[in-house]
Every structure is written in C-alpha cells, then in structure tokens.
Image (cartoon, rainbow, N blue to C red; front, side, top):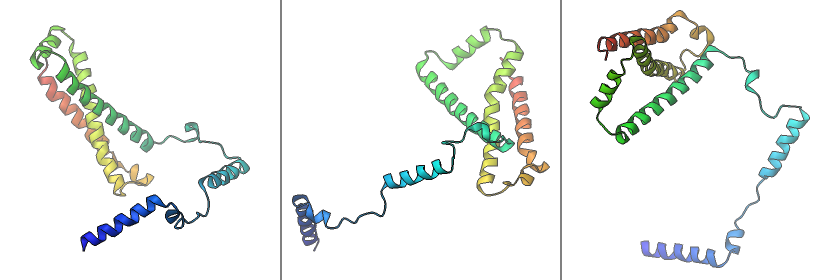
Length: 176
C-alpha cells in the first residue's frame, strides 16, 4: 500500500516538474497586491498630513518607561559582563589567585573598592527585582497608575536597596 502511494506521489511530482501548466491551473489571483496596499497606505498618510515617524520627543517620560529602559540596560550590562568575564578567564594567562594578588598590590583605597563592588552588584540586584516586577506586569497586576504609585509597590525599590546594602556589607568584611 505504501509503495503504491509513493509511486503515485512520485509520478505526480515528476509530472509537475515536466509540465508547469499543472501548477498554473491551480493558481488563484489574490485580492490585492502588496504594492497596491502600500500605495493606499501612503496615500492615506499624505492626505491626513501624518508625520513619517514619531520622534521620541513627543512622548512624555514616565517612571515605568524609564525603569523598563533601565531594566533592559542592566540586562545588557550583565550579559556583557558575564561574557567578558568568561572570555577573560579562558584567554588571560594566570590563575584567579594571581589576578587577585595583582589587585591587592595596587593598594586601592576602600572608597574605590566599595564603588567597584557597588558597580558590580547594583545591576544584578536591580535587574533581579525589577524582573520580578516585569513578571507581575506580564500577569496583569500593577498596571494602572494608581496601583503603580501605591506605597506597597515600592517594596521592589526598597528591597533592592536593602539587599544591595547588605551584600555590600557582607563583601566589605572580606576586603582585599
């Protein structure tokens, strides 16, 4: 049975390659072409005097918009940092201990070390807690302005700061 089916399909495909009229007879004309649609679109835009594209200056900046942009920025920074750290671990000669000894030999002040630790931990904490907020927004919770500005919604920002300070404190006890 399968052999007969394969033979029939094979003959049909062979006939389609040899005579293109078999394929053309099944062709159905479309209602409109893409060119006609685009001409209609541009004619409507020019008749209504719409701008070609909106510029960012016409948007009013809001806190959720800025936080979403910062969330994307911290995500890019984290992925770039992890990638660069992994590549440097593969390509740079020496061990981690030798690099740590080199940093210790620089005799950097505590202010610079704490600033560097803050710069490493802040994107991780902000991206983590703001990612939880984005997941809640994906579930449809906290989308209205009244819900967003509710005092209990500031727990994300507060927990980011508290966790950041506690991690900075933990890491500062193990200074170089």
